Amino acid sequence: MNNNNQVHPNNGVGFAGMLAILFIALKLLGYISWSWVWVLSPLWISFLLYILLFAIGIIVAIIAYRR
Image 1 (tube, one colour):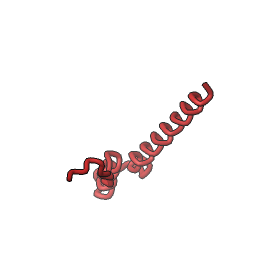
Image 2 (cartoon, rainbow, N blue to C red; image 1 turned 135 degrees about the horizontal axis):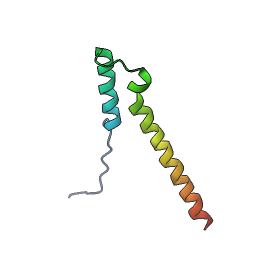
Image 3 (cartoon, one colour; image 1 turned 90 degrees about the vertical axis):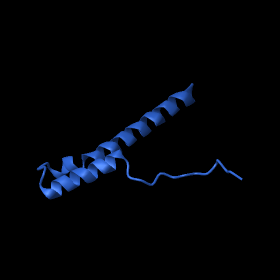
């Protein structure tokens, strides 16, 4: 029996995480002299994008509910 309804969660590191790891390694090895704010920017920028998309979804839902 083949069950095609199986859930396969994605627990891997995404693009922003890999970029942050790369920037952290480059910073610790001395190849870049950026401040830590910019080294960790892939993490906080992706977090802000998720918050922005969530806010847009809430606004769209409110507008659709009022119609």
